[in-house]
Image (cartoon, rainbow, N blue to C red; front, side, top):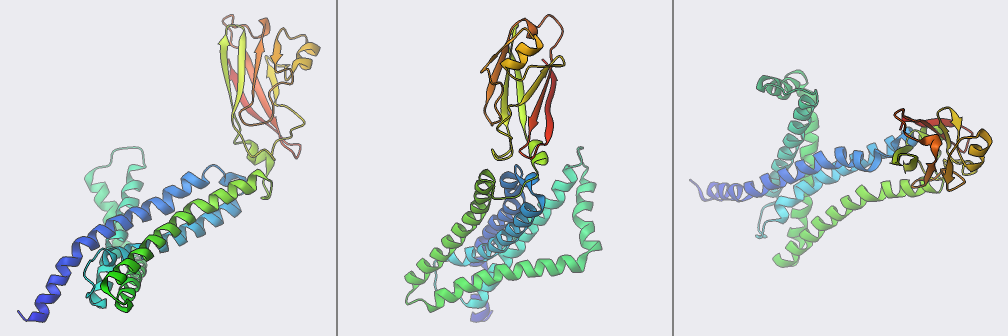
Length: 322
């Protein structure tokens, strides 16, 4: 075996573990960031403005995917302590890491789709879900895979280039790891900042929202704290700008309007309301109805709660026997 070939094999053996590790990390990022992060951060507000938030979420997922692949390619090169690695080996290491990351992401998506049907699949079902897309869509999948692997290889190329241009091996290693950490920090900022900005803009009314659609996110709970007492609590709700704060929640019990103390008095309903103004239109508000009118004598009290939007829309948010 020639010395050059022996050196090549040694470099490959040295790079392979770090490439596989980087690929697993990158695959995890590709699974978690574009998929679960979108659900965690956007799931609660996307219904307020589907067009805007779906567009932002899609663009965010695309950017996170690109940065994740670049980070995947950077990682195996940045982990190497030796500074004399040739650039072609560095690019190869990044490409291998990218391929592993793509494989992890593909296996996750296919296996998740199989187990999402609600029954335990057989081994043949899992194998079919993994193999058939390759057989039916080989060229598109290959093109997408090569493009994603190229992004990882680009990340490795950048780190290798920085190391070659550094004044010394220690400076090159420090600079490459600084770039690696900076990329990770940028990913974190892109994950957190857009949803935080969206929540803040919703709270101050800077984003157009359909009030009736937003009212659908309201969650009111009813609890019987005593045989003659019912407490209503607003557990979840849309941004404060959606509610018509001039009106409390409308509350009907057994078909009688008992929204506040005045309504109880006018209807002759035998109960007191605390606070007298009723259930305020705000998340976390609470009101209690106490008296023989809500007494549990074996027949549940029918409780209906209606929310009022700032545009005049009304929506029943609870209809329950308590």
